[in-house]
Image (cartoon, rainbow, N blue to C red; front, side, top):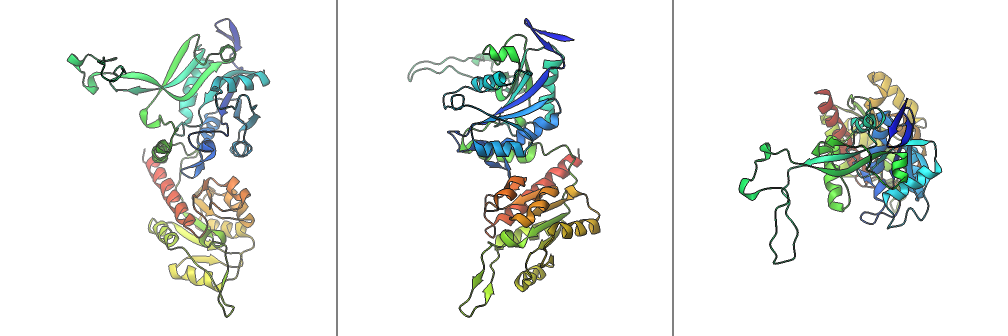
Length: 403
């Protein structure tokens, strides 16, 4: 069956593509699209929601930047290399979408999702997709309800006028439905409408999002608000959180700074970060089991672990095997294990378990595979940063499981 889209015949089962525009030249915040937000690249939040929504036949990141392309692919997207013309500062989002459509004639329907909407959930996407596919709409966009009173802007000294209220009969909030404003999270439309130069046209519909999910990021202040909001309202994946029960830290490059210090008489010593120690104690207070692994047979690491009653595996050349042994002993699911590492021997562990973390100065491959990347270096508070992230995930799990 075909849907009549104002003269355009679109197959009801036509190819539905998600397009996320993410150029490298963001002016407000440098490389904003892959800057870590709550420990994950900003773009990853919308990619996870888009992929898990299950409504798209393809999910694209359109970019002119190699690192954004790499992160997009790592999080499951196809990459479209946009031209310098469509990535210029004055280019519109419509130009970026049109360029991809011209290169991919198989695409019939588009969900253009903004990278800067990190609180998007799959159901926010499934609703407008259904409106486009099944209900005959040609375009659908996201809105949020506002109860703000608006006044006309005038030159200094001139008299202003109310735009949406009668000052003599100011309504109470509960007596007024408010107004619907675009929140910029997404624009869904049919192919020909976009090629004709419109995000909204034909049979136009809107999808209302609650204010707590309506986040947009343009400035550093927005970033702080978004980070707080995403912790509480962000989408963390399909699997209902079970909570973390086992947290494992690699000593080298995580709890230490990977430096080896020698005294004048040839003895070596290590330094450990006090704030990391506090974070580990917080995990243990919450009932989590904490363990350490080290590729060295180092008595200093051993004494450090003993001080807190933490089991450590020294001279551990097969870290994954050791963690699997601990996991099986505790009868835990993969998603109940968190691991933080920094180098090649940690790579499989970071990829395998529910939460994989890395310090800021970890090896590139480890950072690429990590769901959480600290803003701090190893031995300089990265482990504490990871502890805070794990505690946040635990809080989220408790919140979801209590619903």
